[in-house]
Length: 159
Image (cartoon, rainbow, N blue to C red; front, side, top):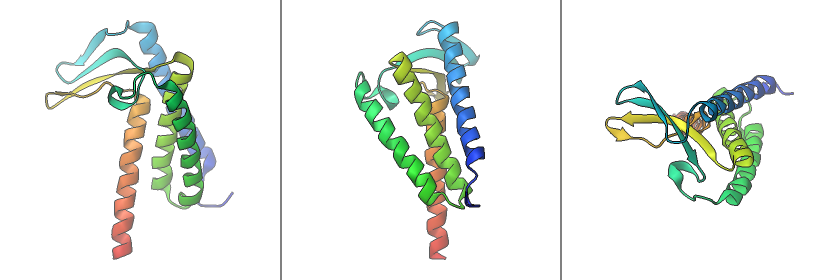
């Protein structure tokens, strides 16, 4: 293994995120009925049991076969990108690891439950943000990290 990679650390990080995602979803399924909600911080955050058979914001409901194919293709691309573009770039590796973990977390739900378990229900500045889960958060943070990496790399190349 070349020095610019630390596969055991990133693999462990991905595994921990997947386990945390699946554990939280398991607890929601066992503790709350669909639609049931528990207040955490009034008017800001609730734990609400929700199911989603589509993608983000409920688009493409019921197209599970499409998600199986897309997820497998995306995972292959992310792993290849990690190997080819992540060398010596810990922030790139972090962003890609978050994307891999989030993709696998929701894929497990689709494969074994036929739907994704969502439960984090937030109100941001009065806006009822779509309900999400740990895998969704991992995907979002991963995208943000990679956007920042791209922006800063672009600035460094210009300098």
